[in-house]
Image 1 (cartoon, rainbow, N blue to C red):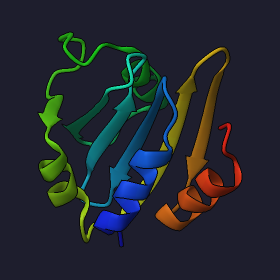
Image 2 (image 1 turned 30 degrees about the horizontal axis):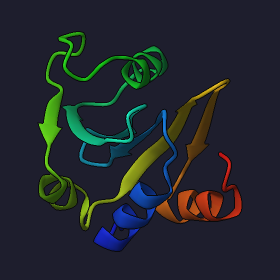
Image 3 (image 1 turned 135 degrees about the vertical axis):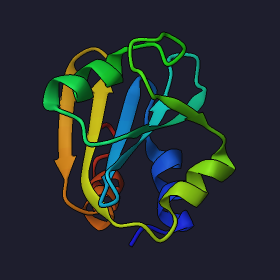
Image 4 (image 1 turned 45 degrees about the horizontal axis):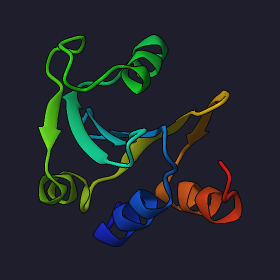
Length: 120
């Protein structure tokens, strides 16, 4: 299960230009994005995403209308949405100098990766 501590750790370790997508067992997908200007943004979209949709979601500007149903979240709403949930899939999309995609099966696996790969 995902805890508020897990979310805080992930937020603190996501680098600029990175997007974390957490597909929950309840069929919602939560998006945590660290933008070029250093701001963190949080979103939710209903349903599971196809691989092409994940990649597009990592690239678009959230304020665009490219994704219908993309709902902006406050940090409190993000915690409420994730706390006590189970992750189905987790992806980390890094969009810096080179595009990289990492996939994880659990929050524990993501936390280990973030801890052992500081330059993800």
